[in-house]
Image (cartoon, rainbow, N blue to C red; front, top):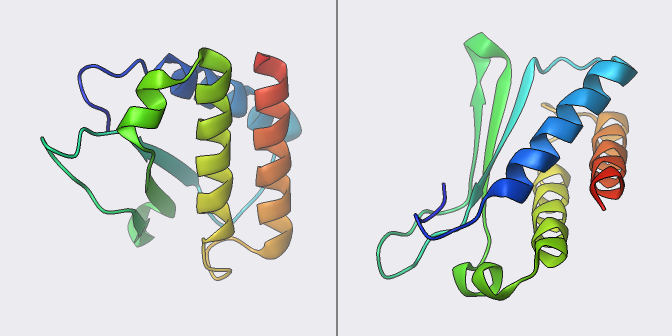
Length: 120
């Protein structure tokens, strides 16, 4: 979720790169889908709390994390990518192990780091 004035291109680039890496490495997990929803909203217009939702029927985990709108707006593309990566890694760390085992978290964090490196 982003405000209309937010450039979300680095989120899309990171997601595309992650998809490629996951497919190439054939990562296996009980989860079918890990959907990360960065939240960059102007607080005076709308606010949304961080969230983590498990969709049992889909074996999907949806994670939403806030990033400061002001910080994002002032940041360069490289800094935005760093903010997105830090936000995603923080979200992964907070996923309960019943949904994502410690070993799987390490793999996902490594994939995020590799994706970011590939984009810089």
